[in-house]
Length: 64
Image 1 (cartoon, rainbow, N blue to C red):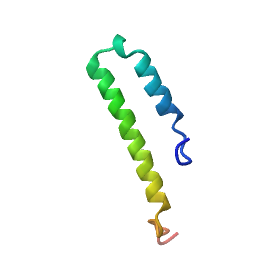
Image 2: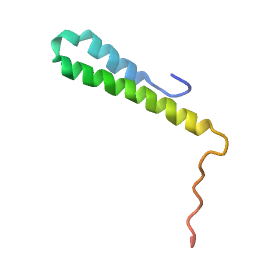
Image 3: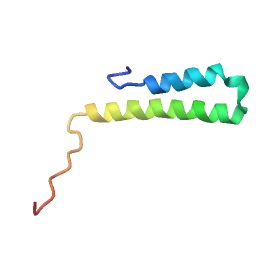
Image 4: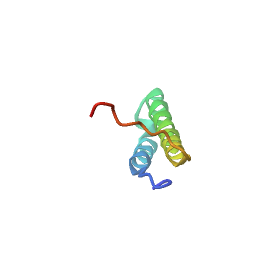
């Protein structure tokens, strides 16, 4: 877990591509590696956004 968010799937993917790095085209390896990095950044951003004081609250729809 990273900051209360389960990142096991990212760790598993990173481990898998590192083990098979030489069995796949370099551009595929680099792409998957970049996706994992982007996913980590996204999860960190979501966590930071959720912890902000006065987080965005969507009002209930009118007429319901």
